[in-house]
Image (tube, rainbow, N blue to C red; front, side):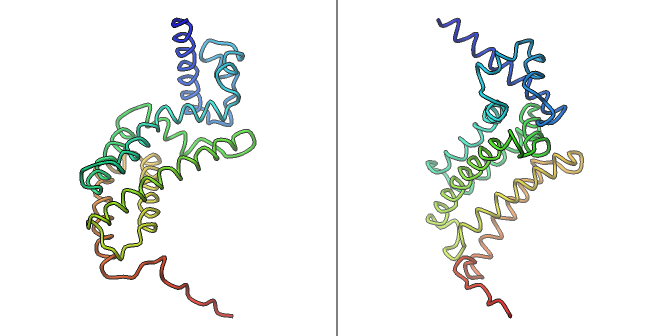
Length: 220
């Protein structure tokens, strides 16, 4: 029985490996389950034994790489260290993996540039949204903790800070994937994070919360 489970796990990993390489080469929508099975040296039935469709296979491929990063964010809520220092360390680790680990870089490249949220791939969008919301909540918790500990001013709107930080990192990664030779992802990322932290302290101390401000009246 143990050997059977090990064989099944090896088959699953081989399918994920094949899918990852084909998605990177052809894009997700142009890669069929039959293509993946053939590349892995298996039958299409083997694919369906492990995954009900291409969306489920894609999401499993993403989780294999992205889960450690999400777990790192999740741990921010329980750290005894400075929340901002731990947030910076977590970001450094993630950016370093994207820049220097071939699998992580390949998977992020697929997720950013080679998947379309259409037809049978709509399940991928739903999964991405779940991950996005989860990461956003972990960030919100970490920044709220930093604010409670006095690392960030009380006037800072934590929700706006969370959204802007997440958008900055996602945009930076996307830009680097398009032009990887134009800048050092880790070095530039840390400088951007330090600028954000400094800006939050300054903006929170000198401007009112965006969320609490009344929107201007629309002219008619």
